[in-house]
Amino acid sequence: MSEIPRTFVSEDYIDHNQSIIFINDIDEIHHLKNVLRIKENDIIHILDNQGNIYFCHASTVSNKEITCLIDTCELLKPYPSVNIRHFQSIIKSDRQDFIIQKLVEMGVSEVICFPSEYSNFRINNKNKLQKKLTRWNKIALNASKQSKRSTFARVLFYESLEKALETVNTRLTDLNISLVETHKDSNIKQLLKKYYKKPETINIFTGPEGGWSDQEKELFLSKGIYKVNVGSNILRAETAAILITGIILYEYEF
Image 1 (tube, rainbow, N blue to C red):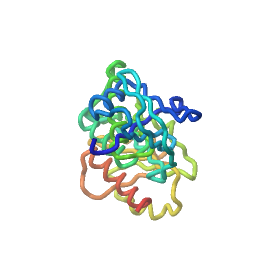
Image 2 (cartoon, helix red, strand yellow):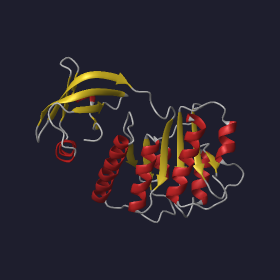
Image 3 (spheres, rainbow, N blue to C red):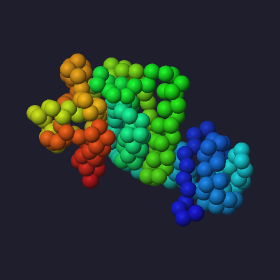
């Protein structure tokens, strides 16, 4: 192994009294055992999604379970320090996969997908939706591990923009913005300069390439969500999502 493997486990599978961690997820066992070729006594880093990293070595390795002995534990500094939730109007499958992967690598905590009025891709079958969510969350988990995050990101789905907006707080500690490319009055840089206090959570809404409908813009207005642009060029949906997230990270993290 060129790099020390890392994985996430639930706190339920950590025995602090005996300093043992149990890995029971079949897919993760397969990846560690058959892809990364982990063996007994090999070093492995395990995260609990609470910000803790456990430096361990494998004690037993089988097809059903991997047990690891904890050597030491550290609390990692979260990155980014601001919680970023990205609301993405769903687009075609391979491009949606790309957006999820890149946003998670950048540090977004949640990617919330939903159909908007001008979406050119919809999922109307519950079984297909569940398969998509399983796939998207696997992409998010792998991106979380690859980018060495201290926590893993989640992918959620809501049936409409209205339902997604119900999860957004309007408290003063949060900043809520929608990317509207035809809105020329305020770009993201101007807004962030005006918003002098660092938010606890930033909720970003990016739409499909067809943009937001007038009704959806009215919804943003009624919820007190700022409308911004990221320049004069018309961007693809995945480009816009990555660019606005990068600008926010630059402003608050560098």
